[in-house]
Length: 121
Image 1 (cartoon, rainbow, N blue to C red):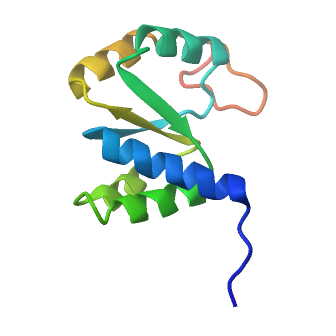
Image 2: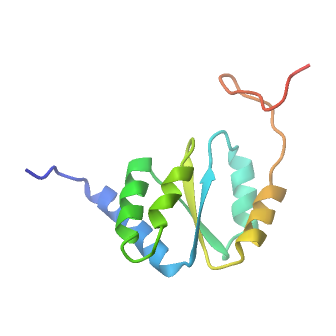
């Protein structure tokens, strides 16, 4: 017996498959504890060069498995799913994209429940 799947979930998987066919380079980001302001700065700097796609891990795994039929080793991206994963789709130089992402990082105070990256003195 087949389980009923919500239409919006099917659309999310379909969109991710289309993005993986459209772009040559696919990367994975951990968006956990990323402040919204930093995300907006990063998106603004990279607008037109890449697309960031966030969804539930299960839907991303389904889409990667389906898209992996057309592209080799695409399922291996799942090994890098940590925290709140997001996929980056681009045709640009991945090292240039990484440089922009790295430069848009900034220190922020830890919120309650978060682990501080450095010792607090």
